[in-house]
Image (cartoon, rainbow, N blue to C red):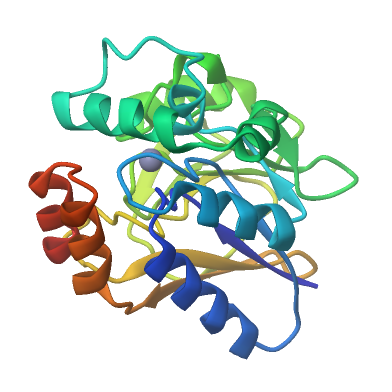
Length: 247
Ligand code: ZN
């Protein structure tokens, strides 16, 4: 069985729609799961919440979802993220808020609980730490014991970290691969709605739960329209422009 794993939609309806159309075209994809940050930065928070609610079987909470609900301090957000979070707080309907409020920090893709899903890091997920380098990964791997892998988002950069039997941690570029069950993995699926790896196309992953294979995907979408909506909503132009560059 194949599962599509999406993350960091950030209220970008154009990107989310394009990714869902791409998933429709794939054979054998039975399910879609989402690693959080449905809202924040973009112009269509309620529309994106509604779609995720209807299409995804499992969803975990992201820091921008928590910020949109007013549940976390905005002091660590940069000025653009902070302004967007306040804008989002004012936009979210009661229905969207109710849905986001019920999301958990951590969940599992499979019944045996060998494949974990979390927005930022399995180690103190409520602290929203990033896993950006081998040291970050090494620390976070302490929480991955019985599990083989943990799918994450948050940095908006698709990447793989592996830990082998001798405890050495390595970073790998986002290339399709098959799990070695003697190793442990963090797989960052990248961002649907605000990629930051220099490629403006949406990023997501197809995961084959039976064969334990990961396939990285990129999907072009109407970036200009998403950017224009951000400008029209009087969110920051910086947030519109970064979509054009994937930064
Ligand atoms: Zn995010």
